[in-house]
Image 1 (cartoon, rainbow, N blue to C red):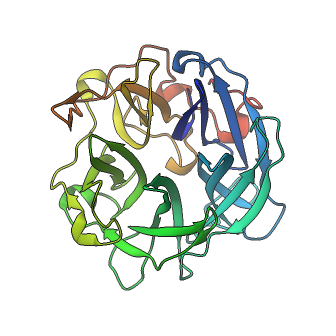
Image 2 (spheres, rainbow, N blue to C red):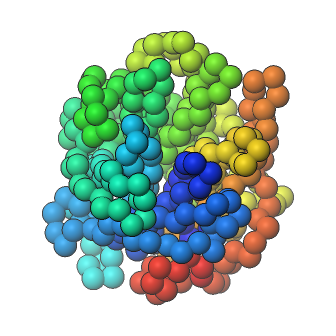
Length: 333
């Protein structure tokens, strides 16, 4: 899917549901298809738009769709201000995002009614984004990125158990912070987590560093029988597991999600750029493409390998369109 960063794919009853950051950062969109290959051409439906003012009026980032107890939930980040824009030239403010939740109890999330469940209270007020969720042993968990001003860096990853899909039931637990050199390139960031439960283990991926060629994916692992709220249960890989590959022209792979193909193989979904020179403000540069490839496992271990070359045309650096010039609802440049 072209120009859809922070991709999230969920497979339910043989159907694939896709969402990701819309380049205007002003709405949340969904697509549905019966195969991964058909998602690119699938109709895109806007299910929520930003508020005119207030805490959910700017920079709608990284929506994720989840299915919990028969209902649909979307977690997303929104802010009241932040970043330069066409209508506020010359302005720049610190990002001020918080995590929010939408709920749909209808059978079809594309045509059903979405209700705002409000801000997910993470326990303190600071920059927070990139929430993901998973259910394990009957308990729902939330993992998200948040800034602690007492810890050097832009964001760390936290986990908590939930009382319901929009309310934490336990205090936040710090899982990982930027500490290795590869996590602190341009910015010191741990963000964009995703969880895969397989073969008695829990694999928690995340992304680190700036959003250029340095962007890369890290990994935490835990036993499926462990106390997931105990940081000691998680083992952090010293090196990134998925990085840029100039040989195939794929740069800055990250902010992934997991799904599976029709044969039950695990599929890694991530965004990446196809060039290294970014024209203009990187925040508004829309050409991070959503990519997918099978993630093989050997003896229970994921074989991360390297990004596969794109098999469909993607924009080049000279094809960049300003966000305001994107066709309405169009995924292509």
